[in-house]
Structure formats: structure tokens, C-alpha cells
Image 1 (tube, rainbow, N blue to C red):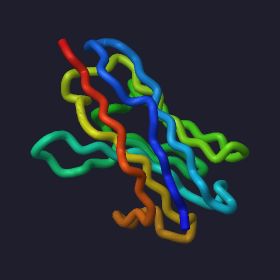
Image 2 (image 1 turned 90 degrees about the vertical axis):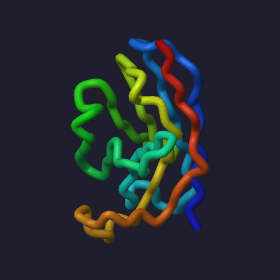
Image 3 (image 1 turned 120 degrees about the vertical axis):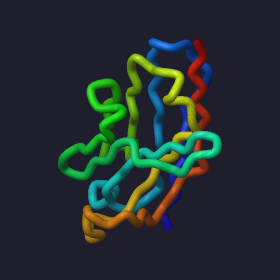
Image 4 (image 1 turned 180 degrees about the vertical axis):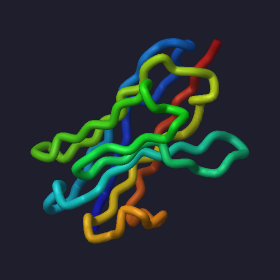
Length: 120
């Protein structure tokens, strides 16, 4: 069983930065692909960033957000810079074993989410 716990959300002004953290309880963390997703009110959950050996980003956050991982400490981070009003959402950490095809839209494990609110 994999448990994911997010932290670091909050209320910030437009243009500010925020770093989200995700602590994972799992055997060999390096064997898991990790990702960040978000869901804004009234919208579907969407992919933000992912990482196994390389990184992937949604076009809307490319060049502003950075995903990073610390395999030794079983942590995943999302550095969010130049935040915009449209980045307001609940952000979720997700994980799946590396044997799941990267083209799959299915993620196995999810955290409870952390709220990020960007104000003008």
C-alpha cells in the first residue's frame, strides 16, 4: 500500500511562488512514477507534471512549474513560480509503479490534496 500526503498549499498573490511537497510511504520509491494533478472548482482534474526518469509538464505550467523528487527521502516537490489566478485549484500528488505504461491515463495512488489559491 502506498500512502501519499501533500503539504505546502496556501493563499498567495498573483506572481508569487509556492512549493508543494508530497511525502510517500512506499517500499522502493525510485520504482514509482510520480505526478501532480489539480482540480479547479467545476472542472475536471488535470495533469500538471510528472516524473520518472524524465519530466513532463502541461503546456499551461511549462516554464513556470518544476517537479522534483528525492528518492532517498521519498519526497516529491512541485515548485510553482509566477502563479496566476487560473492556477487556483486543489493539487494532488499521485504515483504509479514504473511498470504501468507512461501512455496510460490511470494512476494507482492518490493523496488527499492541498488547496492552492491565487488572488489578484
